[in-house]
Length: 370
View 1 (tube, helix red, strand yellow):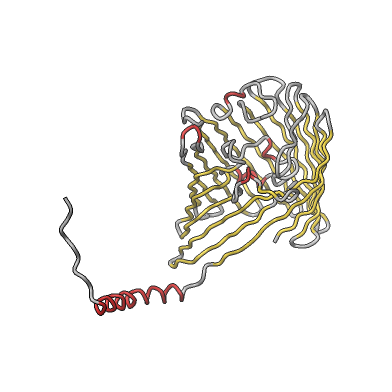
View 2 (cartoon, rainbow, N blue to C red):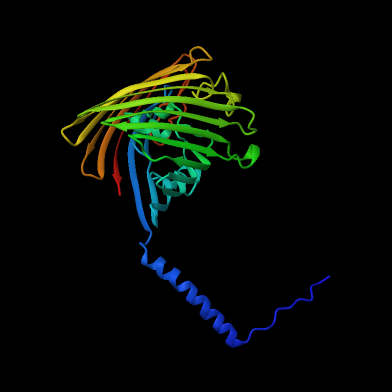
């Protein structure tokens, strides 16, 4: 049964009056919006190109690569003041490989980061795609800054294994800083069962004061069916003594979910069993324009014998200006008798290592930020 109700027709005069009244009501809001500060958008980026020579044990690889020291990127960041100490913002960041002009992170347009945020005196809420919480502890402590000989080759940064060191469907909470202490909480939605992203939770607690950065982190990533999980606990500290700095990281983890099929016999992935991993190292600034860094890593497999490795990495960064650096680095990884772990830089691992081989990477390049 259809309704018999029909609205009475408006006359042209009544319509004009209604529109005029509506315009009068909207004008104050429009004027207030125009009087406020315009949103600020920043375009930024980093271009890193390098020459690399990797010894894989059975062969040597020579390459022109993108991002040995830092991953190349193009980003957009913006904020808008909302009043009352509140602010809206966003970050969109693309990873690029300059040796071939392609997108990194599996071809995602904004694969490095894609976040929208709302912040105030109570802290910041973010939603989108972001690093796992341990990244924000490991990256500033690692003397290699996750570059040549990166700590992330044996220390998990808290992201699902399928998302290029980041998590999709993220909600973050970042606390204000109290007496140098800050808290980051992260949770993700699964969204799609076996074919979708994995549920994860994580946190880090950081303390910064008088040249010291110290913190702890925990991450948990469920399997596709959400019946089991991978997890790791990380502790790290870095302290600066004038031109010197020293650093240490230790992590204990157990992989029971995302890579169960590989456990305990995967010879090429350290993140497939129970493990303990640590790093010690430091840096020294030279002549006001240079910085030399050293790190020693040890991976201790807790499930299978002869699945361990030791790695030594050194690099030197020379600043030509505030935005341009030259660098060179070397990393050497000694595999256990049965393993074929690969040496890595900021962009990825040099795979194809012969089992039991000592593998190494020598790289030099230029980094420019804008």
